Length: 391
Image (cartoon, rainbow, N blue to C red; front, side, top):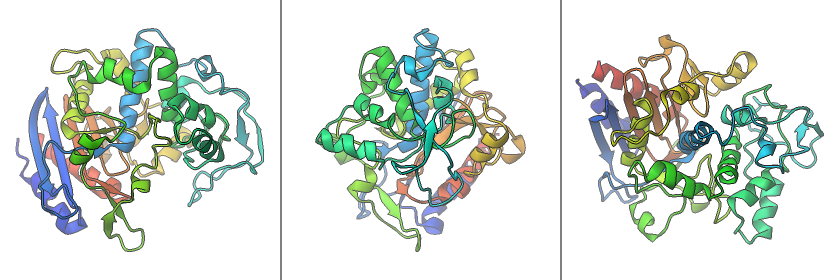
């Protein structure tokens, strides 16, 4: 293996894009084959990046949430084709917008004045996993603002998700693909099925058995000391400045809320162990069985075609389809990774890749909000250079 090109590329990111800090870890067959860090973890540029740093994972949380749901499926606590109302009865008599432009930017989410009709069908667990449930990603919707105010910012995860059931759908389930709060709703399903808080379930069945100590939904004093500096990109100038607390915690809908879609904070080492289990047939290096090989095949199967696939690829994921909470490579001409490679990313630039064919995992982090070039340029280049270095 020769990772000289990958290391040079990672080193160039500060000069080319101005990225203050990066960390990348690659495993193959449960062995670390590459680890490289660049830059500094603080705004003043005094402290180099270290393996003790914590990052806001944002949507990289979704892969972990999907894993939790599939564990419950394996234990026959739920079925992928179950109606969500079996677990969350408040998702009854939902309303769907009569008309919505999914590809219109900036997105204008439906509100209390939008013309709606009663949803024709139902939302199934698989619809939530595949982002075809019709939910929006409006974190400022009136029902969410109201529950936050009524609870003095203390509403629980289940209470917040009940408020989501009052939000209009942007389309009928199973008709379009749209990035949404669906995986937040799945956290509520996990709570209802397991009869425990979402974080408690994750610790009992994922984090503790994998011997992971850094994952958390809440930043306390100890976590604050380890948290890498978070930046925000200016849309007009492209320059980076410290992100406000409001921007950093925009998916923390209340103080007690645990977002299954974007809430976790963690370290590169811990997320890498999780990915290593996924790419190793569902079995971790320490022997813990996270998921069965058959369930992993379900996770990494593409479920969207036609207009739904067009919706997804319009987000920039060229060559990929969408599985159960993950992108899935369906066109080998678009990547040096093999068909079936899967993973996801995060709003601050995290990139997760699991390759079940070659048992390779890649986890990369930077900590910048609102920087789209990380998805269109940096992640694909980093992925391909990693494979060039391995093979």
